[in-house]
Image (cartoon, rainbow, N blue to C red; front, side, top):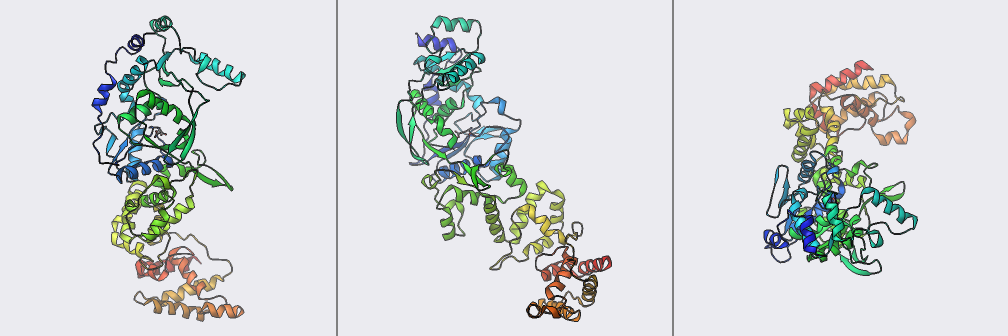
Length: 548
Ligand code: GLU
C-alpha cells in the first residue's frame, strides 16, 4: 500500500507537516524543574469537585515550581456542550481564586500555545493524523453504526472482548481500491489507530500518585479522528499535551484504563511521555458504606453548591487541601497563620485510593475559620455573597455598615470565639433579629411556665431597664426579678431545692430573650440589647407583653 497516497486521499487539504507544528509551538524556555500543567474540562455546564480537586493540584504543581498553568477547553464532543459552558468553567475557577497563565477566556484566549479550544485545533490534529497514515499507523474505517453493532453482538455471543481489533477490524487491511470506492461515494469514515499491541504483554508504569502500576498493552484499533475530522479525547490528549509542552498530566483515575492506549499514541507519534498523576476518586460514607460521590444523589458534588450556599472559598480550598495532601493538616497546625501557598504540595502525599469527602467536616473547618475572622472581614465576604444571592439583605447591610459590624463583632476576638456561622447563608438568619423588617418571634414559650409569670417578668423588666447599666447591673436586675417572682436567683440554688422555686434565673432570662430576640438561643443578650438600643428593646418587650 502506498501510504503517502492514502494520506493525501484522506486529508487532501492538510498541507502542514508535524515539523511546522513543532516550529509553531517550540519547547518552553523555563527554569529547570518548572512544571507545565493544564486543566482540561469539557464545557458541559456542570463543574464538580473533581474539577477543582484537579485544578488545585495543577495550580500548585505549576506555580510552586515557577511553571505554567493552562486552561484548555475540551469541546470535541459537541453533543455534550451547553451554551455558556466555557463561561461557567472560567467563572467557577476564578471564584475559587485559581489563576491561569494561559488558556481560554470567555471571549478569546491568551498565550502562545493556542488555540486553547480543541475544536479550533482541527488542522493541528489532522496534520499529525496524516503523518500517522503516511507511516502506516492509521487507516480509515467506513463501518456504519449498524455494522459496528453487529460486530458487538457477535462478540457478545462468543464472549470475546468488545472493540475493533483482530478479525473484527475489517478495514484494517482493506485494499486501496475499496477505500477509493467508498470515498468516491462520499461514505463517511473515521480514522483508526493501527495497534500493534497484544493483551498478552504487560509492563510496569510509574504514576506519580498511584506508584508502580502494571499495564496491559492495548490491542484495539481505537478511533483517532471522527468522521468530521475532530479527534477523540485520546488523540487530542496526546497531540495537545505534546504541543503545549505539558510536563505533568493530572487527571481522574477513571483515565487509567485508557492509559495503555495513550502511551502507545505518544510512542507512535514520537512524543516524549509526560508524567502522569491519576488522582483518586472522591468518596463519601453513605449508610455506613463508602461510595463514589454521585451527580444525581449528592448536591455537594457540584461546585455551584458551595458558592450558592455561601461556603467561604478559603475554607473549601483549605479542606480540599487536607484531602489532597496527607501532611497538610500537620503543617497547618504547625503554621496556623501561614499562607496556604507556603505549604509544599507534593504528589507523593496524595491518596492512592479513594479520598473521603465529608461535608460536615468542611462545615466544621468553615465555622472555625470564620470564627477567627474579624467582623470587617466577615462583613466584606457576606456583603459580596449577598449582593449576588440576596440583594435586599446586601442593601440592608450596607445601609448602616457600622451597625452590621457591631452585630458581627459579638463574641468575636476572644480565646473562645462564637461559632454561629458556617456559611454566608447562615448570616441573615443570625443577624435578622437586629433588623425590624426581618425580625420574627420564632420560638414559643415552653408550656410548663405560667403565662402570668412570663408577662410579669416582662413588665417588671420594662420598669427597670436602663441602657446605661453595666453587664453586672443588668444581670442583677434580672436576678432581682427572679427572686421577686419566686424563681431562684441562681441556678445552683434551684438545683439544690427545686421544689422551693418556680424555676430559676435562666428561665427569667429566657422569657426576656424570646421577647427581644425571638429565639431561645441567641448571642449574648446583654450585647444584643446594647446594639438594639433602648427604644427597640422596650418596643419588643411591650409587643410581647401585649400578646400574652
Ligand atoms: N476533559 C477531560 C475531563 O474533564 C480531561 C481529562 C484530562 O485532564 O486529561 O475528564
